[in-house]
Length: 68
Image 1 (spheres, rainbow, N blue to C red):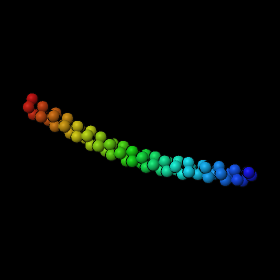
Image 2 (cartoon, rainbow, N blue to C red; image 1 turned 90 degrees about the horizontal axis):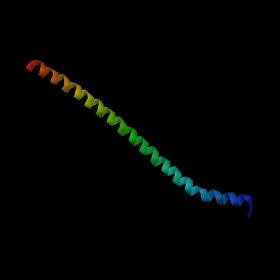
Image 3 (cartoon, rainbow, N blue to C red; image 1 turned 135 degrees about the vertical axis):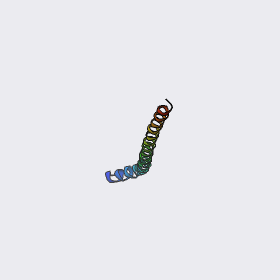
C-alpha cells in the first residue's frame, strides 16, 4: 500500500470527525450569540430596575417629608 493510498484513507477517516467538529463549532457560536443577547437584555432590565428603585426612593422621601 502506497503513501498516497494511506493518506487518502486517513483523510477520509478524519473527514467525518472534522465535519462534526465544524457543526459543533457552529452550534457553539450560535449559543454564544444567544447568550450575549440574553446578557444585553438582562443589563437593560437591570438598568430599568435601578431607575425604578431610585424613583421609589425619591417618592418615599417625598411622602416622609410631607407627612413629617
